[in-house]
Image (tube, rainbow, N blue to C red; front, side, top):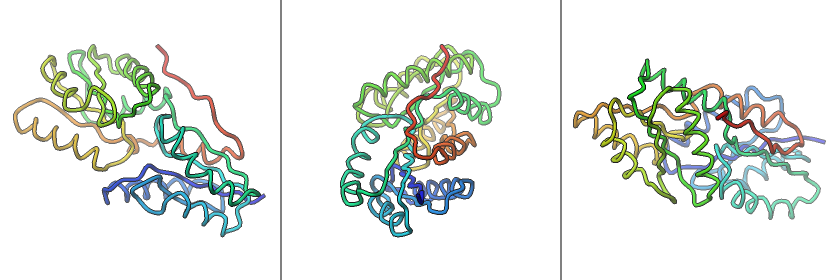
Length: 254
């Protein structure tokens, strides 16, 4: 069997975000012991999944491990990626295809967020408020996941106020979330994007934070998650697990 790894990112219209994702995956590829490794994206950024898959087959792959670069399990993981792979499975019936899971809610990811917060702001005080900003999805599982992350962050950072909002597809939306937490905040507002890379969604958050800083608000933006080494570790692990779909992840202790 000749194994290949096909990494699948979300994709973005942002050139900066696309380059950041490709550079990140380039660092992962350098650490993974597999001769055939290809990068692809679900949408907006080329190459798309079919092209990446075909490249693996052209290089002799008889087994392909698909590694989604997605933080949480929602519509893209449950529907869009399987749909993109369905025709390829039919076209290449002799190629075994295994799909790794999304990262899920993991203690070490919540730890990483806490470390990124402290690296940006230094000492976190109890009166500081944290606004956790997700991409958003109509999938109810996303709300459950963010509830776990919210609890874990509050425990790790020692703050009383952690709120969640989203950039699309569900409520509360970012504009409402940042307004409400700003009204109630006793200390600084720490905005934590639950996003992997730069892109148009993060740019929206950056613009709003800068606007509020210029107006005199004590508000700070934390870097996207891929800046922490633990994210690279997780992707390397998923790429290294051969022929096995991952189904279980650690969850945050309550």
